[in-house]
Image (cartoon, rainbow, N blue to C red; front, side, top):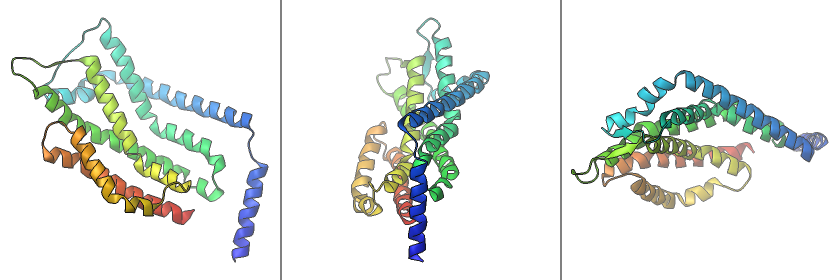
Length: 253
């Protein structure tokens, strides 16, 4: 039985080596994957532009309204350029599944045949993680941050925010949270490469939790411990999920 499995793997490696792509073929494949990704972003941006008023007034300005923050435009045509920026960023978010799919399709030739079968589910899980990070930033992190920023300072000084700086904070925080929520997929990748092991992550679990709590204290405005816990708990859960995924990925490899 073991000899048959070994023979099968050797035959697969031989067939893979026969189909090995040249350097120029890799560049050509990369070029097309980038083109397909840009097409997805452009399509997403067009969809976002159609609903741009709803996205700005109802979605992106809602955290400022809830925090009673005052916004103003300080540049000529500032809102026009702002709308274009928002359309592009929302287009990127809409096309996230396509972006992940193109990345994994580019990596696919380096994977074994049985590993390629999981590309669809990897793309779905990666997209869900990224969108979950964006949702967490929008519903948890941004309200806490903006409420603190709007209320902090002397009562004699009125806090008013430039609309471009406000949108820059909104977009950067949501994208950063989306990337942080990709920790389970990063764990999967590194475990497949043999760089990361679940035993290493379990060994330094306490250190990771301390680091997460310190980071939550810095990222959470004010001194409210409840806000720090609300931010830290999802990060700790992501770390535990990453350990589990690392363990499962090594079992299948």
